[in-house]
Image (cartoon, rainbow, N blue to C red; front, side, top):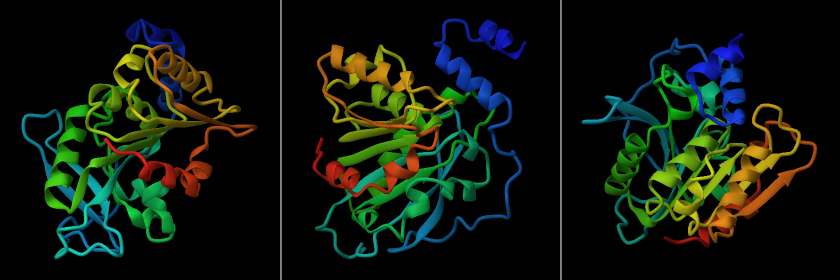
Length: 268
């Protein structure tokens, strides 16, 4: 019954999107209740992941909250060094108002402990509007405003802004890259998917995408179809498939030193 209802309201969406929406509808969304209040008043500090909130104007959300990590060697007084920026988009389970949940997986979990991440300013926003369809929770306008804010307020390199995300954030990465292809130097979608029509828009972007071949939440086909669409448009995306791995293809991906080495080789 739920599948038929989703088909009626989401007519035209690919089957993989409907399946993933069912997964979320059946409970893979965190509680809307926030945890204890988080201090947003602290200024970003080298070697520390700090909660921030950006007030937005003329956009669907009034504000976007996020974590920012400045590398341990980041020096506020040294304006000559420009740091690469990594924008990380979380999965459906970390949506809501409890910003602590964003640190459950990926770069915001690993900062401070994984040496390779000391080469990046890591920005990890939260999709707070849980009433939107799961594949629209990452709003391109809001994320662009956040990236522009980071570029203005930190010693960051506008030609080395990297986009990555897992599951819902993987879908968001494909979608945001297609809407803002000139904003990013490279894109790393993990266990996500998108629309074949994105291929033309992102054919020139360096892309490395990852997926487990035993993923029952977002099937591998969601990624391979994107890769095929980009290649058909003339692009050359990289694809890594993990044999026997289910939905959690992000642990191996974000712990892989070769990923960060490859990212740093990419410039806009």
